[in-house]
Amino acid sequence: KEDFEKDLSESQAREKKAAEDYEALKAAKKEEISTGRKLVADLDQEIATLKEKHAEAFKELEDTKAQLKIDRTFLATLEKKCAVTDDEFAKRVKDRTAEIAAVEDTIAILNTDKSFDNFEKTVNVAFLQVSAEESASQKERLRRVVSTLERAAALTGAPELSLLATKA
Image (cartoon, rainbow, N blue to C red):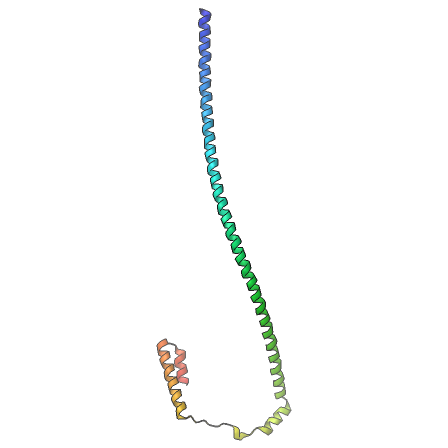
């Protein structure tokens, strides 16, 4: 009986230890499961966030591609306009240079002694205007212009129009 009680007591101790080990293992496994579930939930959240960021980045990429196409079209148009403007400017510069050269040649011709001699021989003082008379219709037109300018100056408050009216 002593052996039996001893075996029973050892058996109960082993069973108690096994139950405690089981409970500890069970608690550890529950903790692992809880941690795993939390990790899965966190990963699911992270995947959802990454998918959202990916969708936003894809939309931004599409928008950027569209804007790039618009910008390239604008650039091509601008380059064409600039080429045309450059050509027009070069033509204007060439024309102005030719005009300046012509004026310089004319001034050089008019400043020669021969030109001064010809001018003195051909000038007729009889063609010189020494006075001017205005007709009644010209005076009436001038009066209407002055009146219109004064009214416009009063309406707009522009002193330049008043000054112009007084000079007329």
